[in-house]
Amino acid sequence: MRTVEQLEDQLSKPTELVVEGLRRLEGDILLLGVGGKIGPSLARMARRASDLAGVSRRVIGISRFSATGEREMLERHGVETIRCDLLDEDALNALPNAPNVVFMAGMKFGATGQEARTWAVNTYLPALVCRKYRHSRMVAYSTGTVYGVAVVANGGSSESDEPCPVGEYAMSCLGRERMIEHFSRALGFPAALIRLNYACELRYGVLVDIACKVWAGETIDLAMGHFNIIWQGDANAMILRAFDHVARPPSIINLTGPEILTVREVALDFGRRMNRQVKYSGVENPMAILSNAARAHQLFGRPAVRADQLIGWIADWISRGGPTLGKPTHFEVRDGKF
Image (tube, rainbow, N blue to C red; front, side, top):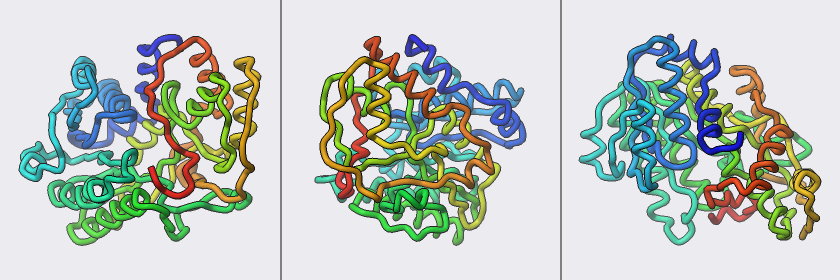
């Protein structure tokens, strides 16, 4: 992949299983919070898969669309768009109904110092959405940070583990889950909660953060020494297939790759590929934010893109001066303050 257009095409390319799933799925698909890093490629994949399946449906993306050109790009690719501040209850209630809802609105970066707004977006808004879309199937994004840190040697947190969120962002995300669980039980709609940890592509993600530091000769912090990743294209495919696994009360699915990666080894790999010396600070902690995604791999199969393949793509992209989104993940944060 040498251009943004090629990258976007790969991120939104549906697998045969996604096409089959959207052929079975009845009705329109509405994506709440479609703007940002993940939403556009997910919406495009839903549109492409529906077209390939021969299904006539609306794919509708809802967002404030603060990024230049984002709305126009989606519409060029057949995704209908509506500009909306979802915290405006009148505007939310005026949105079209749809039998299938992907809920991806959330606030993470900038949460420290804006704690009240963080809770409003991550916990209060899901309650409003549940009331509005009480007759829909819902697949909702969550995060592996609700578990807190896990012992690396144990292979990461699984869905049966008790949440132990650290910091107001992670606590508010657990609040999102609790609101969706409550209203799923009370109002009777099926849902799936997807604990994602972490999606990567060539312009954004933990691997890009490490690659950029290596390329610039910056010191790599080893404190959060281990992590999981998944190619965003694989994550998009699994999100759409999750409509087959909604339940009352909501099913919980960890979504990430099978590998536990180490910051030290990944940085060294980037150093070799990009001909850069690697500098470190600190030592690895035996605990990290890690997820065990065995259930997702049983449901959906393993990701098509391996971590080493993605590392090679990113090393080439960064070395050639490929653009990034300029949005560090802050994956190394241990105190929950983003």
